[in-house]
Amino acid sequence: MIRRGIAELGAIAFSKSLGVEKLKPEEITKLILYCAYQSTSNSSEKTKEAAKNLAQSLNATFYSWQIDDEVKSYTQKIEDIISRKLNWDNDDVTLQNIQARSRSPIIWMLANINQSILLTTSNRSEGDVGYTTMDGDASGSLAPILGIDKAFIREWLKWAEITLSYKGLHLINQLDPSAELRPIQQMDEKDLMPYSVLIEIEKLAIRERKSPIEVFAILKDKIEDGHLKENIKKFFRLWAQSQWKRERMAPSFHLDDLSIDPKSWCRFPILSGNFEDELAALN
Image (cartoon, rainbow, N blue to C red; front, side, top):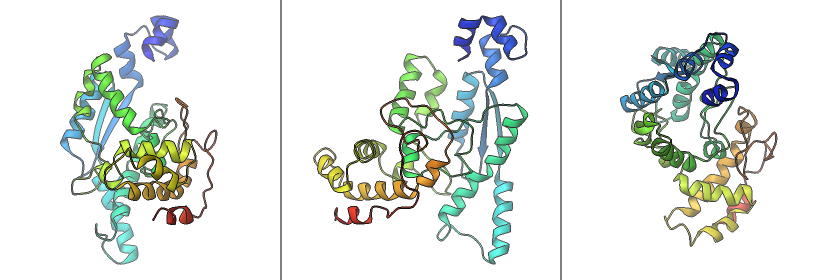
């Protein structure tokens, strides 16, 4: 964006639009792009280092802090109210979500202080199945990659590392997707399903409006992982349950022939029967 702005307006005019004198592109990046890594005891050093390395390679301003105190404070308050301790056996989703939500207020503060647009990292695959925490990682003013599926994003990042020479993506590309919200190793594709399978179901179920049994008939000879029926059921159930989240997601861009933006593209009722009859036909 900065390179294009300078090419169109010139370095002096572009810099003045930001209220500063003539700056180099990397100096402008440091001035307008702020990145923050908010860790908990469940966050890994590999992820932190990958985030720091990427931000620094872009000459962005990078911050890092822990939010364990905030998580502990919220958890203690609710434990006092309900008169019991929360635990991972009974309160898994709750304990995951409070970590994501505890990150929201302070990152909004940073955005407000710098009069900046807060970007969310939600992608289309996560939007399909609600694999995002409302008022947590979904908080933001703009969702740049909400219109792109996760599998494509992962391939694009590898391409950008090599073809566009974004060397700061190297450590990112070595990581398997993980929310890092549980004390034991957590993998997104284990929580959900392989992203390659998810996008095949998405195309048929959402873009082509096929029923669960039709999706299975089309994919059964294409995908042989032994869990196709279960993954189709999971997709349709999570899709139906997650419409309220999609209604509240930050605005994004339409980049191909499929969008899950309910305001301008893909309407679906917030209250529905969760495809119970259609999924029963798949048994």
